[in-house]
Image (cartoon, helix red, strand yellow):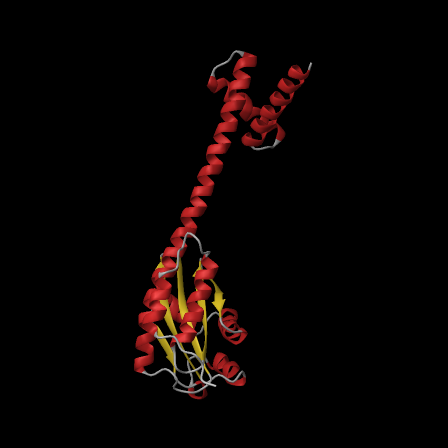
Length: 241
């Protein structure tokens, strides 16, 4: 039975339709791997390597075999996907039987039934780099035309990954800002309570909060929340009485 194939143009369009606000980063990466597998006429398995702070991991894969081949490289600290991630270049392994750059990795691939591979660097941003990796069971599976298709596809994938990374970072920043605003609101409430009780200035009220925080080894925000909660309970008791 012939394996269904997706036309590269359709695959590019499908990537462009991804709504990053509705799809998580992991889902975007998985979609990249799956579309990569579908655009080639030769049966392949694909994976996406991400490298953050010098630590590499396989963020998406179409088969355990692809992930295992990636992880072998991470364990050894070298290999085509790592070198492609670092350099941003295309690293082709036409035939694992004659591969001399990474002999241990090539031997493992041969035992697993693989015969060729190609890794294409994905320069996402300064803090994160990666590679699109494709593995085949026949030698010389990636001719110039195929590599050109993958390079074009990788360019689209890199944009999708960069946007997803940016969205993920922006969403994290938004959560942090919301938390900071909530913390400030609680602290301001606590300062108001102290100012009312002690008849002191805002600066003096914060100094009192800071001292309690230091003496009790708790965050200022937690001390402020406890004070606000206590005042709320006292107010509720007064109304009940």
